[in-house]
Length: 123
Image 1 (tube, rainbow, N blue to C red):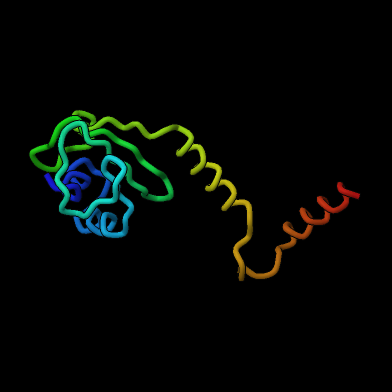
Image 2 (tube, helix red, strand yellow):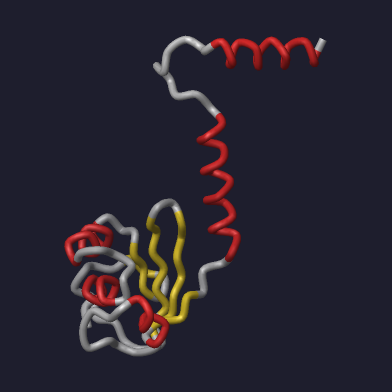
């Protein structure tokens, strides 16, 4: 089975077009080498892909006949992604929530009070 079709079948990408595009951009590797979307996938191949700033790593168990439901995905792959990848994503999410976006305007009254409280604590 083609790598783009496999990634679509095991629900890493919503469409085959997205899977093909990821392969063309070099975000998908099989056994350590960057692959084209037409690369054939076999059992025991190790796939690593980068999606949403997470480096997923998986091992192919078997080839599905067609797209499978989310409950049956574990029959066809073993997810070996380290937990540190997901923890780093959580930290990134929290750090983005903390800062104000550029161009959001003046601080509100509450923001000003928080800034004043912070400045008086440091003095």
